[in-house]
Image 1: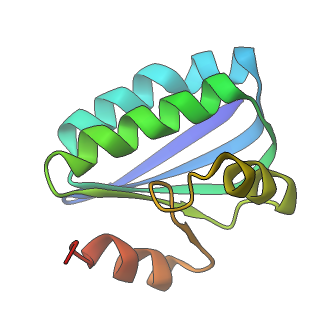
Image 2 (image 1 turned 90 degrees about the vertical axis):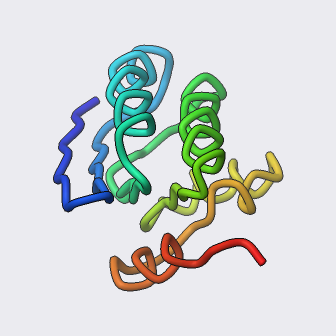
Length: 114
């Protein structure tokens, strides 16, 4: 699993490439938790993720909840059809919204719950 982070003020854009299996989830766990504690919002580019395991979903959910407690947001950018299907079947698309462009991602993180 490869992880690259670009920080832009209160937002961090994280690009993931590889398999988010048990080993991949371990690679991203600490960086996601650290960013969720430090930033207001995260955009996670999932276009390079070919597989996602439940342990990786748990790390994404944990980061999303950490951000949500501070009125922040985590969005997933361009996940593959396989990853999108897993998230939809898990019922997590409200907590982990899927966007298809960076501008859509920025709009989503700037939305506040009504």
